[in-house]
Amino acid sequence: MQPVVYDASLILQGGLILCAGMGLVLTFLFLLIGVMKLQALVVPRFNYLMPEEAPAKKPVKKAADDLSAVALAIAAALRR
Picture 1 (cartoon, helix red, strand yellow):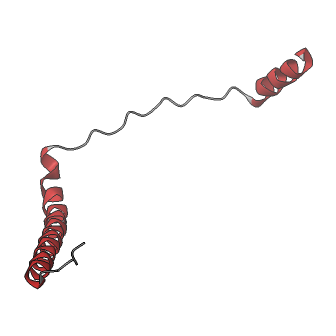
Picture 2 (tube, rainbow, N blue to C red):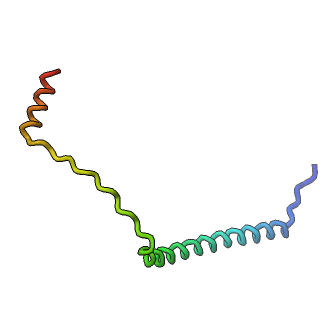
Picture 3 (cartoon, rainbow, N blue to C red):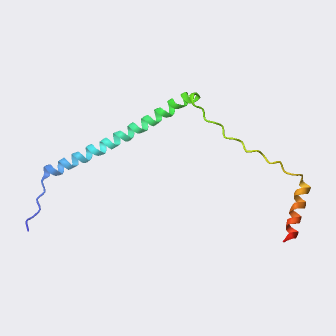
């Protein structure tokens, strides 16, 4: 078995590629955050062009008078 010989230049090149890749990702993330913040400032100014539709209101059921509700509850309880 031969001993393993490490080449220092390959390790340095690997470290350089590692730092360059991480720097590229970090730069992209900062750019992404900046674009999203800029978009948050610009988009609301043009909201009048395509306003959101208001949600449809559900009709409110009017409760019957209290005595009929009580009578219905009593009748349901007696049927059991």
